[in-house]
Image (cartoon, rainbow, N blue to C red; front, side, top):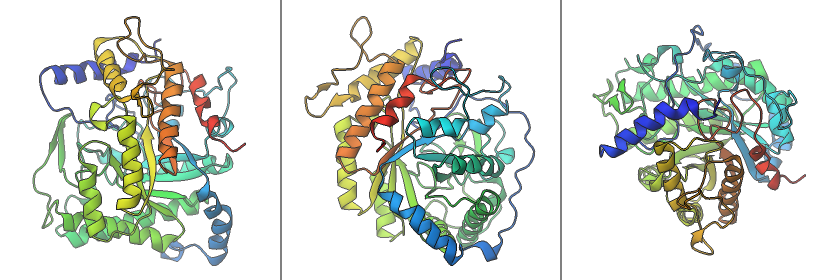
Length: 442
């Protein structure tokens, strides 16, 4: 079965939107809709305030075992759907993960073996309460995050936690208010809910998995802000009616909400690195300037960069952003998401995506397409292949590192219905997973 078969419908829809002249939301986290089996509720226990801050002994341990490692270049892999696929929630058969040679291997031990040092996990408030029709592929509940956090710790990897502050995907095209917060009547109540929820999640991960995240991301691709939309109508139309509380999507409220999240994290453990995450398109400087003017306390700017989106820009543009943001905002920069197509078909929609990527994959030194990339038979576009996947990821990482980025994180590598996955449909790793070894100190 072709690795990209599951992405055909999505790609066809994307092409039709492009041909019709519609503005396609350029978000990295849109997915083919799969109706997952019911997984029960995701009740989050009330915060145990006695655990809001680690003990002095735990702080010392974290400082010794973690903060020294912050100087290491982040080699991250977003593995948010691993538990989902292992438990056959998508109904396509449970996955058994295998190394490149076919040897069955525990997933996070496999990542460690191939040079990964950090694992990113997204968390949704309550996917069971997502708006009707919304995509909940991955079913990113607290229970799944706890279960995977235990395994991440056992494999000797760092945890990078990604709060979407939604019951489903959040990205530049949609920031849907969690169902349980929709009835709040003031901005202060929303800030309080964010604070309590953030503390509660961190408390439960620490209590149940004995894990403190190294990095915590407050919101996902928040270019337009957070908590904007109040419903879901279709893949391009999200409810945008006035949120129940006063003020709505104002700069003041965006800063207030993120300050509530940041303060909760600092109170829980001041050593955690706080990440603000934006996408390369949709005017990321707008929100970053808003947060600078609002004096938000955070440490790292996380950036999504996908060559397949023309608006994400060339590799040179990526470098300019990394170096420029370090100066302008005084923050470290991390490539929080990046990807390129692995073994894909050559449908017209896929070809259009690869042509867009080809226009961005320009070597800053030669101002020409990277010479080591393999083109199609007509030399029109960079092929989607395992070999090119590895090379593109290396080029993005090299450019980011040279510009002063503190690391990179691949996205969608474990996903079965997405073209830039790094595993076969049945769970065997592509050789491209070895790209991490290029940067591993061992």
